[in-house]
Amino acid sequence: MPASPRGTPTPWSYLFIRLLFKFVLKIFYGTIVVENVDLIPPRGVPCIVCANHSNSLTDALLLVTSIPSKKRNLLRLTAKSTQFGKKTFTSWLIESAGTVPLMRRKDYVDGAEVDNSHAMKYLMEALELGDAVCLFPEGMSRYHPTIAPLKTGVSRLVSDVLSRNRHNPDFEIDVLTCSITYMHRQHFRSDVLVTFHPPMKFTPKNNPELLAPVDFNEIRVLTAKMHQQISSGTLDAPSWRLIRIAKLAARMYAPLGTTMSLGDYVRVVRTFLEAFKLAENPRGDPTSDGETPSAEQVLREDAKIVQLGRDLKEYQDQLSKWGIKDDRIRRPLARPVILYRMCVRLIWSLFLISLSIPGLLLWLPVFITAVIAVHQYKRTGPVWDTYDEIAQYKLTYGLISFLCVYFAAMLATLPVALLTAILVPAAMWMSLRWMEDAVSAFRAFVSLSRLLWIGEPALRQMRARRADLHRRVMELAVGTLGLPEDPERYFAETGGVEKGRVRGRWAAKANYFSVRRRRKRDWNETLRLYDQVDYPDDEY
Image (cartoon, rainbow, N blue to C red; front, side, top):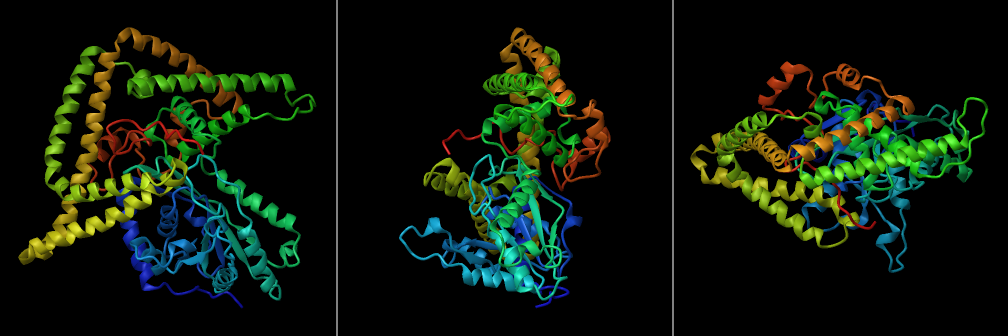
């Protein structure tokens, strides 16, 4: 069956859901940066979109809203079959978007037969029509620092589609891998990076090894390539500890905050992360050819990196205990300056909070509903099995309660309902913007007050400790990892005008008053009264 030049037309329900959740995601997450949109195959080209899966339904919604409608008419989703046929908003949402149910063995432990042949046939027919299909090859969502081993289903689907179209040697199917990186996936107003990778293209003529009967080793090879591409664009670690120290090393190496693009920040963190991972894992003895370092040199270098990781962890633990950021140690302040800034931050935060109060009264039912729903859901299981759905619960319950508040306000002001329909969302958005700045200012006030409580002698010792760590981090970054020697200049000048990025002193000051988006100082910021640097400690 030849591919359609335009693919399946976009159903109205899909358009509605896409617009609705584009709006919801933009409110929940502070900044959503999408990289390499130009790599997405155009409409009419059969395409399988694959991504890491750490945030349940939110991952699928992000992909749906990240792929422009001018590129693809729709993205056909898949979800576990247990999500269908329920009288819940989530179930309605999944079914309305034309999602295909897939059965998982773990959901049918009572001996029921797991048969996905009908679903796979439907997906193959959709691909032959030139549609894009979304699959998460990990097979399940989970709150875990590492990407799970990928299932071979995507590779087998590629093989089956090519085999069905072997009569057309030029029939093409693309596999578009995507990496999703959440700064803090479950926290309100945190940031997200979506990175698309160059698509892998397959045709019966160029890939006869994937035509039936196929050697299963070829399926494994393709699956391994997908895993390598997905993991290359996100943070993939065996423990949260390594991600924590890699983020600290990146901030020490390039203390640029949002002057550096989110994509560059994630890639620098990943570079340090890979170094810490390799140092902690045993490696085979290299053979010396005059250029390759000897086994003793490799072991000695690994020991230095492992020790650096331990020292960074102790340093971050002390910062967390004090409740301050590394930037407070890096840039010391005189006591009069601290007192002056404390007064300014406190007055400014109180002023912004007073401005926000009318709109916050409208937000109150939304926040209460989301908090209660998430609190009850957390009690249903361990961290690794529940935290991946927190954002989904906040999104769905927040949306439902917002609609209730919105229509209730319109009914209460029926004579001027049309005016209310505009003023209520505007008031809620502006109050949220003012609240973000108020929380940030109060967070700075608390941090500055802690500097006074800690005292100058302890801070002086901490600065000396940081100076030693910074020297060792720079040696690792420049001497071993090949990162730029002058990161503050290099990363401040590279790239373009990305979302959430601050370019220059004028933009830093002007963007503070932006209605569209808060000017953050650090990609790690969320709507919290404390800096979020730690992760849940739980067995997984």
